[in-house]
Amino acid sequence: MIHRYHELYQFNGDPDIGTAIQVARLRWARDVWRMDNNEIPKRVTEYKLGGRRSVGRPKIQWMVEVET
Image (cartoon, rainbow, N blue to C red; front, side):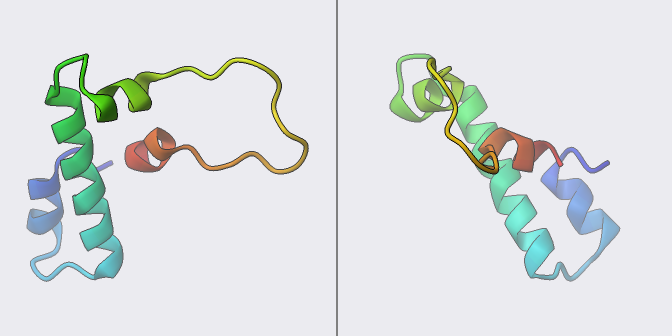
């Protein structure tokens, strides 16, 4: 599994669109991870919703996409 964006470039010198999207997600995840806890993107990313889930297929979570 690729964990850092520079590993993507080492894997494939000229990244395709899927690789470019994964690189952008990893950069954003890194930036959010480094933010102070009081900044809005960090708070939104770590916020846990309460209540009941809606009926139907579950929505894809952003962090799940970053980890894959």
